[in-house]
Amino acid sequence: MNKQPWWQSTVVYQIYPRSFQDTNNDGIGDLRGIIQQLDYLKTLGIGAIWLCPVYQSPNTDNGYDISDYEAIMTEFGTMADMDELIAAAKDHGIKIVMDLVVNHTSDQHKWFIESRQGKDNPYRDYYVWADPVDGHAPNALTSTFSGSAWQFDEASSQYYLHLFAPQQPDLNWENKHVRQAVYNLMNFWIEKGVGGFRMDVIDLIGKQPLKGITGNGPMLHRYLHEMNRATFGETDLMTVGETWGATPEIAKQYSDPAREELSMVFQFEHSGIDQQDGKDKWDLAPFSVPKLKAILSKWQVALGSQGWNSLFWNNHDLPRIVSRWGNDKEYREQSAKAFAILLHLMKGTPYIYQGEEIGMTNYPIQDIAEADDIETINMYHERLAAGYSKANIIQSINAKGRDNARTPMQWDTSKNAGFTKGKPWLHVNPNYQQINVKATLADKDSIFYTYQRLIALRRQNTVIVNGEYELEQETAANVFAYRRVDADTELLIVVNLAETENEYTAPASSKQLVLSNYSREKKPLIRGEAQQLRPYEAFVYVLKGALDEH
Image (cartoon, rainbow, N blue to C red; front, top):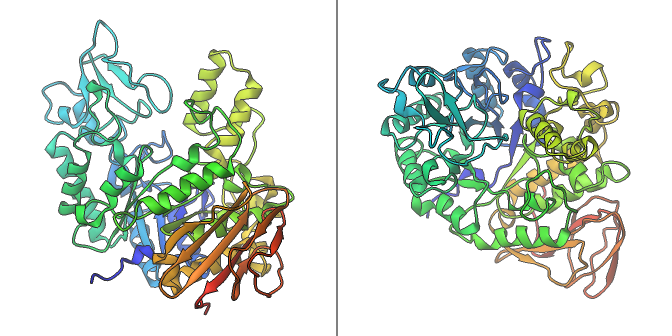
């Protein structure tokens, strides 16, 4: 029997380097800042860091427009700093997972500079070029960042494809030389000792844009299998693909070990709960706990032994969960802990986004001048031109804008939350005086220690890693309760995702209380006895067997 992969029992911490820790006081986080905080991350207990892009980039899209995959952005440091980070993290028992952005490059990458030189250039076919149709763009494909996905190039009288910003031209994966160049740069990082790759919008690399196909193209899985064989296939690296359009059946194609593709994917079905049906993310809808239960439970069950889940609430593209679906005012601590407990005891690999473990919140803006994110700014002007009111647009930005997640990490109560002594590249949330790492570490009942406990429980107990998932069906609408079960152990997890009290009746008598987010008597649950759940109350009991809690 094969040894269980390390990434199935570890927890991954995502770092947005620009906002994590600045050591040279230029207002921008850097690699030395991450090195400086490795002791903190070891205390939390995580086993891997997913590092958002630190490659050389002109920063049109905060590093997701790469001009050199084998160089470090000067704002972040040097390749020597990167080598030191990989080595120092290893000494702390932490692996570095690089962000692999290979659907597109920067327009300042040497490949694209050459490609633009003319139709006969050997790099021309590294990108997707097409002739005009009736004097216009080849078709109606649109960019994620608003407007057409086609940019006209005056010099050659052709259009090039950019599914994101015009400064992010799409690579042509049908070209075998492109694919080999990508595998070469991956092997460059593998040889440096990284622990894996998070693959940005990887479901787009099989695109056939002239046929209107972007996600899940017909060659996608063939390319991923080829990548696996050419790079990480014989290693223990963790690979996770960002796949916005994945269904459970598609996810199994990516993550079934027999197919030799990826370890797991990020799927985002649950992230659409609070948007209107058929609309985009800016068209807001109320949060629905029954919808969340249905979606997360479907994914827990459907992958079976053929796939592996990634578990997350937050990332650099999503607003902070405590503000989004919790209550970031009077129940901030309780709701932050409730969402942590709900997610971290499910089957899959959990991801923590920086600041989540201390309950950082969204940062509402009053005016578009306060925004930095290209997607947010483009949407604002597009909707303003379409007749939306400024108030309506700002409301959407404050709910869903990407800057919410990107405000600097809040370390202490000193100027700029201890992030920098310079002028921070993005505004610091004023609530850092109350919400910061120093305060949370001093409070033994803080959100941080709930995360620390959850991470340790996963590392120590196979029922959390491998146990079956069973949803408790007979609950109040806003109560999310489920069991994790294996041959020896059975856990019951109960979470009230509401600002109001809800009643819950235990389906079985319990043994020990493992974890709760309110002070709670140690007495067991009694089958059939009604429990009054306080707002955002969450608790975990052992129904059978015992947990290792050391």
